[in-house]
Image 1 (cartoon, one colour):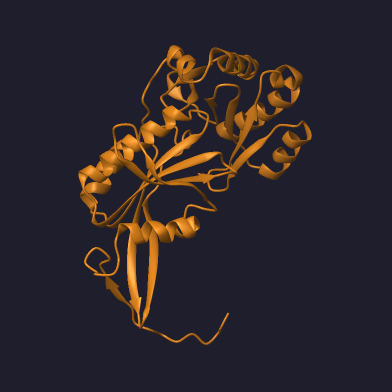
Image 2 (tube, rainbow, N blue to C red):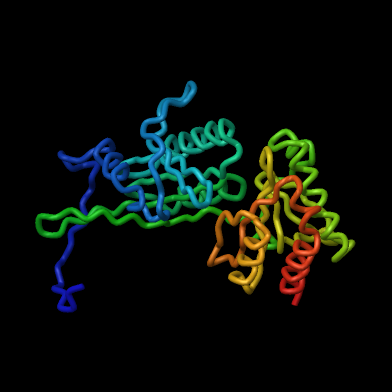
Length: 290
């Protein structure tokens, strides 16, 4: 890196009003390098994906490590209601089509006003959604694209007072499977050994815990068709990753900010690893209440 940097004044420009740039051009740029939007090392799954009775999704991006798909809608200029509605509609189509993946709606626009941030924030309590503002800067004869995340998705279980949409067991049996709910039941039996007052709370995007009518989400479950993803908060992340991997649990991802390990539990894992899981659950429980 050149240590002697030269100060250069940039000028903000509008891609919408520029004669040489349009949404198709911007989509091609992101296709070439999806990491440019600042959501990690993403892969392009498909561009202009046809939606049933609903147009085309601009970009479908994929995080292989997290098994997560991003439904991305692009709009030059100022964001509007139709942009948000399309993004939610396409997100809903894709999560129903492939329910075993996590899905997140993403809107990208040059101008995201406070009013629309408030609107998106209301959806964000029940719909995982990210808003990214694109700043186009002209520096001499060069164009710089600066993507700034102005609204992040709500991470489940991180705030014990978070707002969630309540559901029931039948909702999750239909969304995932009865078999995967059995895995949750077996984990719940272990939790009962730790604290008999803990109960499963069925929410729209996850199954958390509550105790004496208060959220107690040191641990949450996300059931899929053939397995359950556990998201658990622990202080010594590296030690617990090694222990889980030594017992052949698959680590999905680690939230460095949230301190949560996400890993898969399959049908026979609870019975075969009862003591390990109890130790993990107990450790997380103790750290949560201290």
